[in-house]
Length: 90
Image 1 (spheres, rainbow, N blue to C red):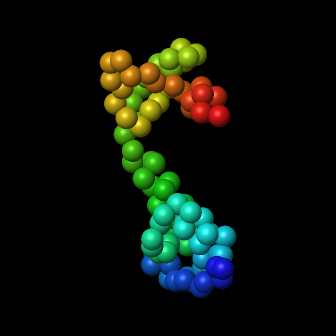
Image 2: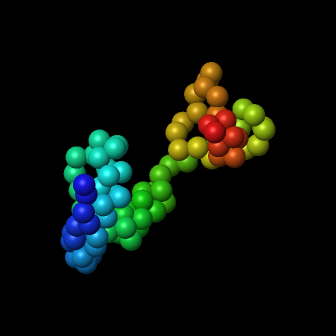
Image 3: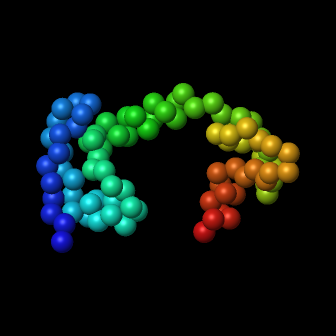
């Protein structure tokens, strides 16, 4: 049904392949737009956003360790470290 497409990255200008399996994934998720950036440029943007994200210190509800979360902790809302969060969401 889907076929590989050649696209041009809007950041670096290089050609990249939007594979048939990626297109199928996009369709399953309901994404309507094709990617504008190659994988390397998408990863770079994600890393830049993470580096500038404000993090907050909290205490994990399960293990009691101090951890960092990307949102301001509120009273009555359980906070979990990444390890405990992964265990709870399996």
